Image 1 (cartoon, rainbow, N blue to C red):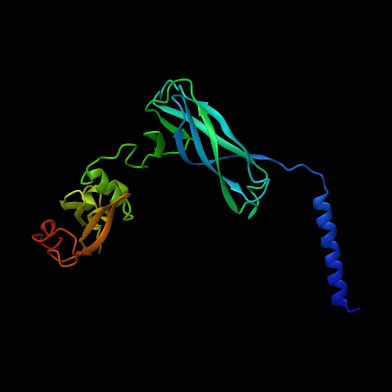
Image 2: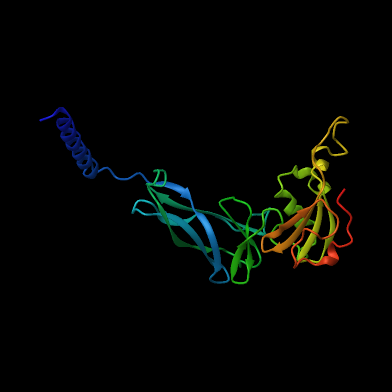
Length: 253
């Protein structure tokens, strides 16, 4: 018998022994508590709700016993917030590839006083959830639970500016609204105003950035860019963009 064949048979035999030891070791699995991922909430009564969570799955040891570990629904300093830690136990969540899928589950929530319009905060993670009929929706991380209805409001424009990877403390000074009808927006963007702000910029500060005009459309999540230009007028915009917002504008400067 060749040396390689001897080695291969020995390796296979050893693997079989290891498999038997693992299968019949009899040691109970070690369960650990983890925070659950909350994906939805809906009311089931005046003082009750169902918290929808996504749990690791793919093995019987992946998740069990989803529940609320700590509930504070009458916090003296914040009567408008209900705090709840939603957790589950797992013996494989820390194993790489041990739980390849996810599975939905519901955790009941019962509070002492009516839910009313109080917001729900899970696992101390912002943003909270706010009531929207019989369901709850996640509040916006910057615009809060009740964003302005008017998309031309500066809060929505500032939210868009954050997506441009600019210094947040100078975000508003870097944009100038040239036109807005709630569905369409013309915005002049000057990155140099953020890189060399007038108030705290060094006298020798220089920026190679040049002003650019952005044409934006209102989308469910906020404003999204449809075109940009450094020229005057509407030459670069899509056909559906209202010309009245840009046709008389000079080049951005």
